[in-house]
Length: 189
Image (tube, rainbow, N blue to C red):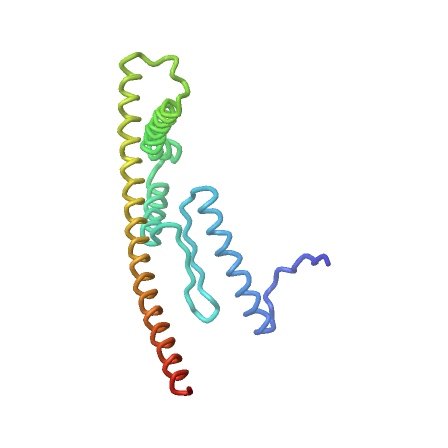
């Protein structure tokens, strides 16, 4: 079934208007969330219902986003040359992006080396350093593994003690039951 295009005018029926508001509000909040996650955007959405109820969504702090908006509006209104002001405004962001890009590249190179890839350009000293780093990592991993094994062994020993105690109780009950039956058999004879 194909829906027709909705005519954009005020819905006169109060119930229909409220239902439409509720559905569209949920859709709008969902879209705001998706935009913030997919595009890593800072999103703030404020909705007042016809009855005055507040609905809001903020990908980070609502107050910080509003303050950022106010600063941005003030900067664009105060500047005589918006293009110059925007470039000055984005310089720290560009610098931070370049710095983070270099850091990511360094981390990726380090990761490749740890995986044994791209070692052709490494000197003997770098390879020795990498080997020591891997040895330390392996020792940490082994220590963690042994700790987990010890915990599991302790849990199993505790379970064994519980089962042995339960077994002893059941044997005692069985012994008493057999003794009671033999006494009843002797009394019957």
